[in-house]
Length: 156
Image 1 (cartoon, rainbow, N blue to C red):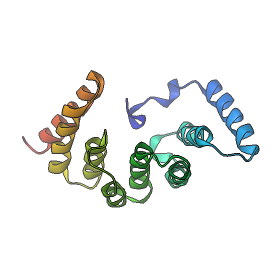
Image 2: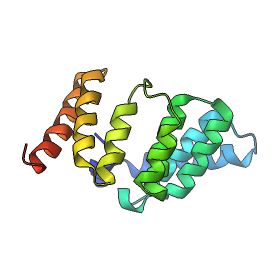
Image 3: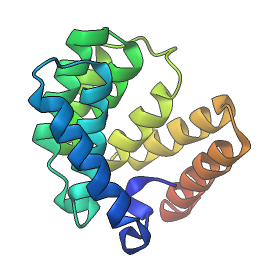
Image 4: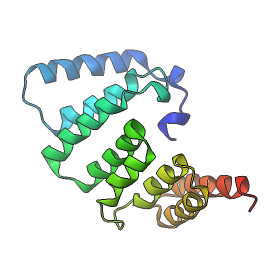
């Protein structure tokens, strides 16, 4: 289930606080590694009362660190989503354009960013494409629903 659709009141705030304390202790050692940076991204998501209140600019900064540490194309894909949230969908699409479109979930990210930019026709097509490529039934079902939702909005 996407973060924006989760009921944050059901999250285990005690476990989140414990995780943040562990992260702060690890960051205080000043030996940043991949796992600390990933934990920082997770902490920023967990700290936001709502998806809309997420500190996306800071998440982009942590993804920049992760890119520096790992060079991972998946990290770059996640960074494109964060850029789209921080700086708008067109900035996210520009970041996504730098990546190989054969990358898993590339079409899903492109669909999401096109939808946020108001291009519902392209978004619906890309959601359907992403559903076809989805590695799990749950992900396939979610992406199929997204495509259907947009097609319905367009009267299709």
